[in-house]
Image (cartoon, rainbow, N blue to C red; front, top):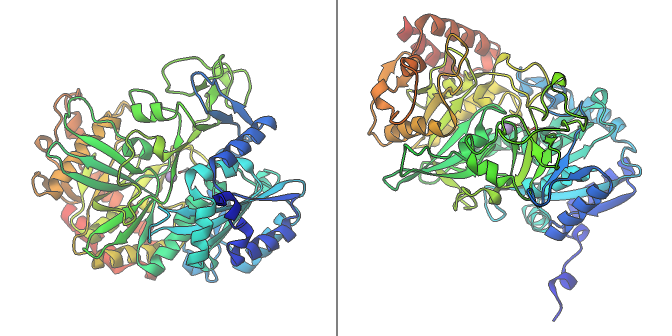
Length: 590
Ligand code: SAT
Ligand code: MN
């Protein structure tokens, strides 16, 4: 009997549409070789070995960090570049004031010139991938072409990539086309272009994360948000977490926070010892695809298969599971090194850096040892809390949706929206201080609706209308909440301990959804009273909880005026229902 290897069809013969596209890209980019990714472990090992031989990957201490490697980006290529990211729709209005826009023909022409001959002397890799469980009707596929083997080894972890994905593409008959080249890694010749009307992405000049792993933000959010509107679902920048209560009930929450605001930590939350009986399961840590189900509920899948998480701050106290998870078979990007080649980062609380993220002798005068946006890439299966339902084809049912930002004042610890339409306004009004996940000044407050400001592939006004439309189809819609873990006192100290203690807030939400927890009515929604939150065993400063739950009328009048001004930028396309909700809140504030 022939072995499987003998009978397997060569990848280029599986799907004519993919092969034709690869041929045209090959002609344009002139690579020295073409490699179709099978997606096997042996292939990943060979690619890793090649990168090690080329000196592009560095081995880490094999006794302490088996199977782990370090990659160092170019110092000018360490974060997403929103100012170079474009949505190229025929009509500029469709991209909206929230996106940079370029005419699709002009963008194609510009990119053609950049891509022409850019892979000479390099290998062109073809990565067929599936976002979501391979057998799920909710999953969607794409093909990334890249000349970066570092991108390939990331994509092999972050997505279901290889033969099985290509077989599904051949069955589906459609796929997102993502063309990527690192080019010269020159910030002056760097563009991340999206063509949602053609389900296409073209990215040139960066090798970093969201700019280059095209399955992630480019496909699973920008292009997918467009597909989702056409097909009646939502593609969101949300983690998905399952909480099993001491009663033995499991509920799932989908929570949106801007990049580097703790999504991975919340998705992998460790219950504090003073809250016995709770168990936490991770479904996803960054992206959720939410579909209305036949039962009137919202069902979620995680389109990703791995985590691309922020390293700094990870230690046994902040996130024990993440700390353990990244001690083997993990790819580190832009961390520092100890004398015995262990990875090191700020907030690790042990060890000492001798080499910084750029490979120089560590000198504190030059800034942090690890880059603040240093990342780990690791399979979701390495997470000890990975949900047994994370790969369910139909997804998991969502009990509550949570929006949050990083704000030192104004936003209380938590509040509950009055209903779905008010919840859409709450999501649309999210504001957050910028972080190291994007190029630019960190710590600047900006509007980041639904944490999707960098990721919505079309006009936010149409997106909010789509949210309202989806809500109207749900007979058992999730309740909607807003949280702020980052509120500070007058001295600038955090009022809330965060991390595992956030479970206290999530537990209140679940009790509210079950009709068991109290709240007090405020102009902006329902807030827990001090007695409604379980703070047993929590060492809060006197008055801290009251300060965390305070809604200052003067600050909120200003906040609502800012929100009105912001929403006004969307003109006549803005759904009237949002303004109506805003007026209701304003009237209640007086
Ligand atoms: O660079 S990524 O987009 O992958 C990470 C993030 O900013 O959320
Ligand atoms: Mn993210």
